[in-house]
Length: 444
View 1 (cartoon, rainbow, N blue to C red):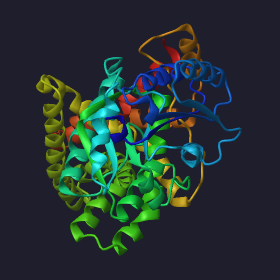
View 2: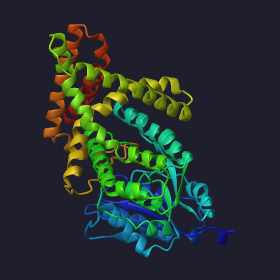
View 3: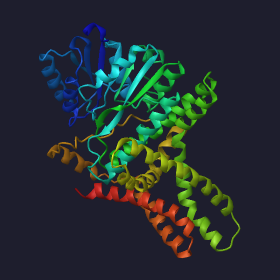
View 4: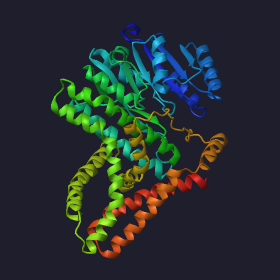
């Protein structure tokens, strides 16, 4: 039977991740797959103690008969995309599985995903992200709620409807020829996964999303880590939109595929409008209350249309929770926190979007990982060190929180009850972000 299984290369891109490197390598080494058909590449661009940890674990597993190597680069040229491309150059597998440092694939991951490649048109099989530390804090619970909707609804529906979906950067398996036909990994955007996904699908490769194949991962546990992640995702998605939109509309795909792809790629462009509404909501109400003519009718008309979208958004989140959890009704409690938290991140994400619009190139900044499943004094030292860094964005978010809370008090004072829910979301969103900022700056 062994000859029926294709050769697979597992790629593990790492950069200065000493707290999770060993755990990742060990999890991948225990994956159940014919050993003669399996290769593991630890793509290590690290400049810290991660290099030694990786060397020790690769040596250990080599002694156990596993084909595993440490591919260490002296520079980070191309960042993660560059590491993946460099590893692909020497990989022997016709299929390539990729796991980020904070993921823990189950032993049967390849046995569940590889059979789908019997169809030669399949270029990617994507698994669903799970959460190792969802119950760590309110912050991680909110993140888990939002990510569940992306996977259980967005990825699921796009895939089943035949629309373009994206590789999520990890927990998936690529066909090597699909990567190469799509133009290989590129570092000209911070969303190398979204970029290659669209380029490959524009070449008519088919993707599959498996909702029942879960790969647990750690969520960012503090605001600096979450902000870093969201900034990179927002800017990278916008860069990919500028790069790919023309190609999408010049392709021969159906109009509905192009429209859905446009909404998919331009999602980050909502954040400046969130900020605009946050700033204008109370002043427009005050002008109307004072009897001045202004844009209030148009403004509130547009908000009414937005309310219809809000209902759809809520139902989408509800469906996602119902699809994943038996206690889904209790989990709906997190919806207002997720909705508000998304608004609260609008300031940082708008900055990311404007950097993409200006064409400003920045380094690929990884999301800090702490292995919260097994705390240690080393982790606590690193977290404490980060907590002392107070940035301008933190102060600005605090000002927006105060502005939104004061605005909520004015709206209530004026008796503009229809406007209270909107203003309450602004206050809760920026208030939550500020509370998380303070907590992770000054408290253990």
